[in-house]
Image (cartoon, rainbow, N blue to C red; front, side, top):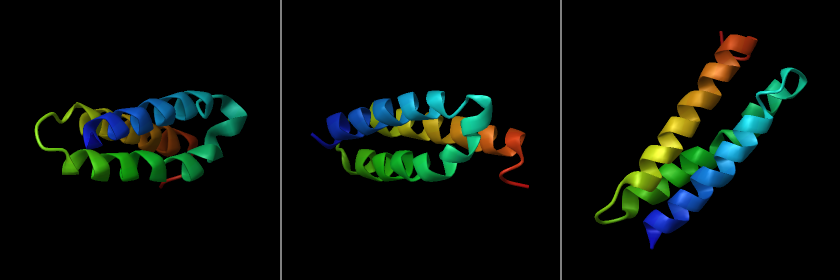
Length: 74
């Protein structure tokens, strides 16, 4: 059950991070990045499958790279 919740959080985060890739909206990543962190934590609680956690970690990495490219993280 936790894996499904983590997958849903990861998919929502992925859509939001894709929107934040637009040039003017890059600062939205600061508001979006806590979502995949929470999703990865929930995905860690799942017993067998780790796909939700992995999706959240990939979305988190994409968001952090976008912040680094935009100068949000030095």
